[in-house]
Image (cartoon, rainbow, N blue to C red):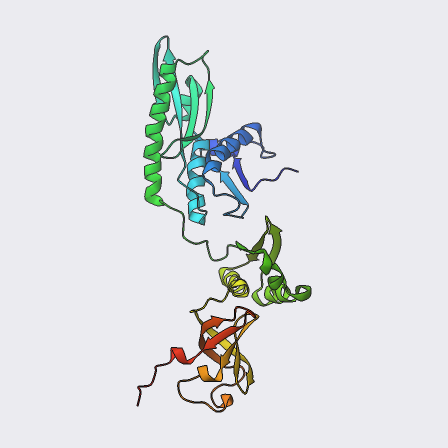
Length: 333
């Protein structure tokens, strides 16, 4: 089965040219024009790895007295930017015509319907400011000289640049974020060793994570790395799930300050969870600069406290925390 992540459908109803007709299955002309526009836009789309969405563009032609396929290309480019799709550059298009009499000829830019019908060429050229992405030519003469082709391409380049300049006045780059109700999809790459930590025993952690953040999370191993896809109906839930996962796979770093929660108390100190599933010992001597005889006079189970990771035991991997280094040091008496 053939799969596509980008579809562009072009519809040309009879009323767009003032006619009455049957509206039914897509015709050969509509398929061809849609495919031309698809080829024009496709090179500027982000890679599937960077943009996991499936895109469907629909061009509804409401009026036509010229090249509606080139209008489709320009409209598609603006629509993608307005939707926040990170396309590389704007894509524009223009249709070139030709009037030829013997050895004499005139190349026409942005031809109308009559110029297409009565002329000798319909040469559609699409591209960016840097070059051509697609083209299609229909001719009614036996052939074209290099002179005609060169002039047509140069005239098309100038016309395309003018069109792109006008398009940029409306929108010159994609929106920074999607609209509020756009479903969110994001991919996170983690080390293979953390896959089990995210899933949890019997899938307990990932199931709780999906329920609490109202997201769908899929994890698979690809090229010895963990690939996590997070799907959500809104940005807030996605960010919450992403933050939880990042916390699970985070590696504690000496010198970093963490906001942890007191999980347990002992006579010699408190055990603080600084990251999900990662506890460290806050020794009684590291709680405050002044002497403390009873940990419970300062900390209670469930308290949130800022601590600094001051060391990791090279043999056991146990974390050593300090609270007092974050407090002002009292002056010496």
